[in-house]
Image (cartoon, rainbow, N blue to C red; front, side, top):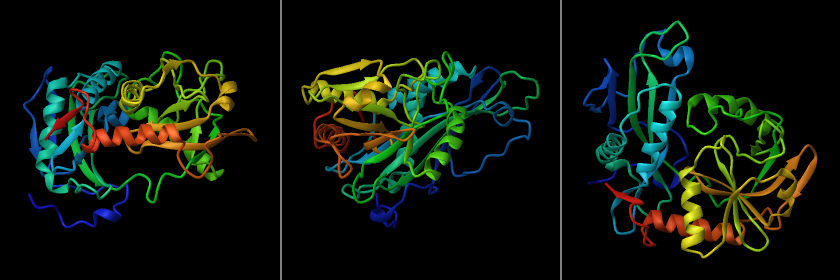
Length: 340
């Protein structure tokens, strides 16, 4: 299939409409068969549940062109299960995991001409999401829902290399104990918008959120999990019931242990010990790993030995290995790569 005439090398991380998207509707206690459509618009009643009580969950993953020309997606089964978990928490009907993967495959295949060529640095971003559609005025779950998948080609998250970020310890809380921090709900991201705008206005790239109960433990940022590297090269990630279970983080921990032979720890990380780490990074779908060079805690600077110029050596190895698996340079663990 011929690719679209797009300047792949200069794509930003912005929405570009593609030809097809997948739509399925839940009504009368069941999902319809669903299918592809060319219509990118959604028409809803003014009183739809999604508008009134924020019943919406979403996922994000990518499709790649490998060096040998195949189009693949990375671990969509984990996205499917996470959306099932998110939906249950917001009293939404789970879209079956096997149908989720099927819908993702169909949507990518229908938009294959938009999957950037190998070597361009760009990828096809895939956004499955679900929301309440019928009118709801009393505080209760909606009765009807829509599940959709759209795609958009995006450039590399960091153009010209990944310059280490500067973070600030946020005065805001990201999630409450026993709240919704561990699911991918739109409301969680809405909560982070004022905090990130404030951080940017103060000259920072991102926030470091602490646990809301004691404000002594590291949690995550508005849209990524933390990875720390100790001075003896152990990979450490914070463990908390209010952290989103990142698929990228889980994959990086597996890579660290089974591909690089590193010791891995998932445990409580206290703010007071962050100064003792050698490297720090943020991990997520968009950038895989974003290096962090400095964290500012109300005027007190925590500077990592890896510096402000480039990724630390271990984080670079993790990044190179995982992206090598995604792009087909390195053999993937069984089940990680879904060929389209």
